[in-house]
Image 1 (cartoon, rainbow over the protein chains, first blue to last red):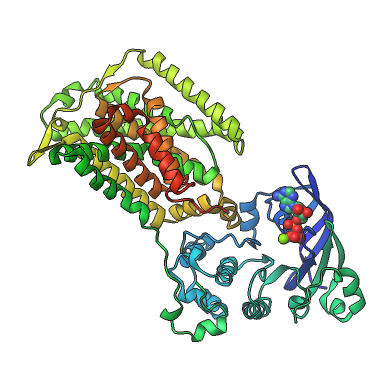
Image 2 (image 1 turned 180 degrees about the vertical axis):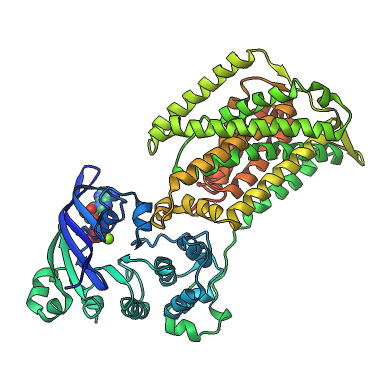
Length: 240
Length: 345
Ligand SMILES: Nc1ncnc2c1ncn2[C@@H]1O[C@H](COP(=O)(O)OP(=O)(O)O)[C@@H](O)[C@H]1O
Ligand SMILES: [Mg+2]
């Protein structure tokens, strides 16, 4: 088994008085793509936000590449090599596409070869390079958000429901991009729709009620109809 | 807006066919010229109108200088600083440390000597208010992040303390602050008189506005500030410390308030400790009209507020006191979140 890059042990997160995460145990192996599944309100976004230090765990431990980042501040976690694509995308709508990516490039200047690699996934970005990001369509904004996460090499990408609200054709393009991306990057991808990710993920974790209720290889879950029914039955969106 | 989005399709599409329209909101830009033009027949006399309009523009520029920092301070960290006026007064009073002892240079009939002494006074005022801003942020603002009611109370408290300190240091008497010799008088354009100092104020205001515009649009720090106003959490997720950015903005905003204070004091040619409180009301009306967090909106708002005050003072002196409130109500009825509402996450 490959080395564990990110590890959550018994993580509890409170938001105000609400006890949202109730002991999350999650491992993301280095390389490849881990899918975090679960119905609406299961706590997936809260898990990612806790990893990023946007909420702080009240109990338990988050470690990244062997370092304890449980209490670290968001900018430090980011600088440690974790990029985050939030559910709301977090686009700076007043800024151009170029400026959005430029701010994500902490080294200062953007690497042209890497940009070309990104334009390979998302040609629309090249076209709208100097347009205010707020004027783009939902799918294009999502591309900006993902491009921002990969504009420099990072060690882990956290991507929260990138397919949400997008048209099927766009989702297909997105999934194709992830298939290529995971060859070089480690990705933790949150998704509600099993069908989109069953052939994409290497490992999978399923969340419910603020806990991980299943973790294992994606191939095993994909092959086991009964288990799927049990874990995802009620929430499985069937898209034909 | 429905442009091609699937990568494959986008690659093949003709480039300009799919370009989204850039929506630039021009309407607020028209407000200042439209207001000025509408007032021309009402005022009746062209020379009077020129004088009033220039007076309004000059006053507007000074208010903009004071307000521009405050709008960013709110935009970036949601901090309501009712103590901003303290920097205006401290700036103005600090300038007297230079302006009063160097009276000879002020009275000299040499533009160079006048400029040197005023420049020195401004430099000192901005330095002191900038440093004071740093301390104010640490001691007063930091403990009340995210707590609006406490922010209002404690920053108002800070303002009162500043006013009392001014009484202690400079006395309770008002201090005469005559303009330097070469800044006095007016240029005559036809029948209209435009005071020199008003032209200077307009020039300084435009310089500050252009500098801010360039910094906010062309530098990384500026882009981070704009990004932070929209979504500070995402700026942190990209690896930047928003608090550090905020301290910088707070200091710059305080120093600009200090600059505005010096200019306002020279404009009125007297100084009282009330200068801060007096300008605070105007400054808040301006940033609300402009849209909290928007520097462009703040600029237009400041000009509108000052022009309104000047036209109303001439046309209907009785209404003048409430004219700016009426202006604010009118703008908010049209755009409830100000001229340029800032997109928030
Ligand atoms: N800011 C918040 N304040 C209060 N409750 C929240 C907040 N954010 C999320 N929650 C609650 O936490 C639970 C998990 O939310 P979330 O992590 O967003 O779920 P998911 O991403 O899996 O849909 C939900 O019940 C939601 O209502
Ligand atoms: Mg979510």
